[in-house]
Amino acid sequence: MAEYIVRASDRFAGALRFELGWCRRLGTDTYLYEGDIPEDPVFVHKAYRIEAKCGLDFDSISKSIAEVLPSGKSFAIECQLVGKEGAGRAKLGFGSREIEVRTGKLLENSGFIADLDKPDVIVEIVAVGNAAYISILEGSRRNPHSIRKYLNRAEKKFIEAYEVFGLRDFSIRNALDIGAAPGGFSKAMAELGISVVSVDPGELDPILKGIEKIRHEKVRAENFKADSNFDIITDDMNMHPVQSARIAASFSKNLEGSRLLLMTVKCPTRNPVKYMEAAMAELEGIFRNFRFKHLESNKSEVMMLCEKI
Image (cartoon, rainbow, N blue to C red; front, side, top):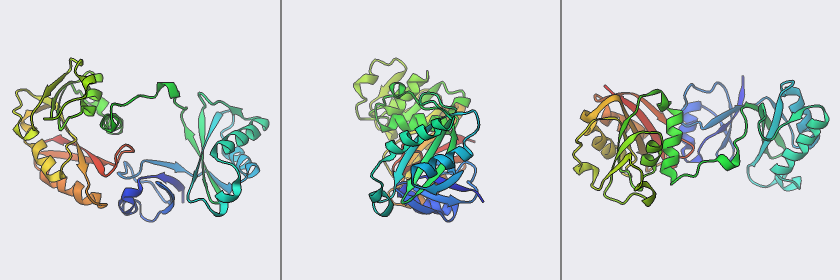
């Protein structure tokens, strides 16, 4: 049976174990799991299939990587030390960066091709105690100079949700963003060419004032009277999910086209499933095809996407 290194939030460790079954915590937000990863898991951020396991020394790591590294493929190494400092880590005398550099040189000396900018594969090393778990991942590294600068965490959440839920596959032209201030969701949507009505009694960030596709309605969502239709409602309001869902549902008559609701389900306790079910129960009969995801940019909350019936 396959083993995986799973990245997930410790905040919702109970929900993760409910979703996967047994898994062992290795360190902060890092778990060891044996079994099949469910399709479209809610609480798993990333899952790396373990291709090799060895001792935490340079020769063992390089030899183990050489056995699983695809022939003719260029590589780059990324390493993370996890777990508390103690037994293994206290005796190392080196950090993750040195593991990357020295192991990479040993592999190059053996005839493998290193490419730090656009490698064919990433060799992911998770070092725990005296052990190294090795995974081979597709893809290339991002250019650090091209990393997006976000207005706030809300903007980051929307961009991540846009990718995770495949929102690019929907025709979204107009959006109603309730609980918008200071405007992270609105900014992200406007930059995607979506016209946004941003509803919040609070001020939007000054950077949004020059964006023509954003219209700010400075009023509470409960008191806003929509005068047009929308392809999507986005709801990042900081309130109990039942109340938040109830307000979002009140605008369902203004949905047309893609007819979507993207809502942040706030979770006041460590039992997120309770709040996911509460939000869904409030919206059933109006919306369908509920999908949930705890994003890497989420904290004590889960994103929900659903479609109007």
